[in-house]
Amino acid sequence: MTQALRPPSPAEPGRLGEAGRSRVRAGRRRPSRLLAGALTAAVAAVLLGAGGGTARAEPVNPSDEQLAGAQTAQDAAAAEVGRIAGQVAAAEAQLEQVQVLAEAAGTAYLAAEEARVQAEAAAARAAQDLQVAADAVAAAQARVAEFSRDTYKNGGELTSEMALLDVGGPSELVQKAAMLSYVGDHQVDVLGVMEQARVQQAQADAAARAARDESVAAEAAAEGARVEAERQLANQQSVYTQVTAQKAALDQQLQDAQVQLLSLQGERNAFQAWQQQKAAEEAAARLAEEQARAQALADDRQALLADAEAAGYGYARPAVGTTSSCFGARWGVTHFGVDIGAPIGTPVRAATAGVVQRAGPATGFGLAVYLRGDDGAITVYGHVNQYFVRAGERVAAGEQIAEVGNRGQSTGPHLHFEVHPDGQMHSGQVDPVPWLRARGITVRGCG
View (tube, rainbow, N blue to C red):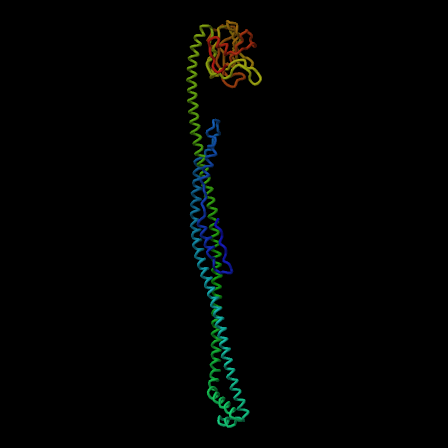
């Protein structure tokens, strides 16, 4: 925010000085706020860890209405900042004008004060001159008074000739002659000087009073103008401070609106980047799936060829699919078979020729088929969706006896296949993978 201007000092009425003007000009050079970091922060928060292989939560995608609203808010804030900026410029121009007028009023006041001092000095000089004239008049009056006393002592009216005859000697004669000559020459002048001094006294006193009154009135008028100018300056300073404060608040609103727009735009950009990355990942996954499917088909063809060869020996693959779990210990218990994942409905075939011992509900398996082969081994087919044989029925190797399902304690469609070589129905299980491999059937995915 622009710093408020300091009121003029009483010692220098009406003068802000260069420091005050510098503070006004400093308001024009307010540093703009940098907003580039807002967009960087918004985007970086989403893109951090983008290279990781773990799945990331879907980022927020601002709606078009949110983006449009943020753009509208930014435009409105910018327009308001422009409007108040015009007011700030006008207030600043008015403030500078008032400053000039206040300085002029201060200068006029100082000039009037100086004129008053000069008038008072002139009045003092006139009083001194008047005192000199009065002293001269007093001296002349003293001389006349002395001559009058002498005349009175000598008996009333005394002519010049009689005064000269009435002397006691040459010395007194010289003195009386000089006095008579002075009075003769100056008596009339003394009276004129006295009258002139009185006139000059009255004129000087009137001029001094008039000059003093005029200077006092001028000083009072200048003081009033100075006070009014300072009042206007204070008011304009208040207006300027208010509009600059409003502009600072609007600048902050504009920055907030810009940050909001940049943040939403960053979120939109990050969401679009996430969509593109997700689409790329899905495309890669589809490609990998297609490649895996193609490989699986190739493996199936190879397996079928092997199965055809093994069928000549009386054995077949129980189901075509992907190995999802192998024989061995799992969480403190033993998994007694191999799980072959496949869609529900995938054919389940007899691994060997033999007689069905049991077909139907089975604990844990939901539905299962138990088959005793011609070699005496029991093979078990669990979690089937449905079965197509019954107990006592004889089947050939490779004949469909059920279809893959997800019944019982199952987490997904698959066939659970077990082998009991010693002929026990519920015990004596061995790893089916090596057992099948020994009979020409390879199950990938387990050791």
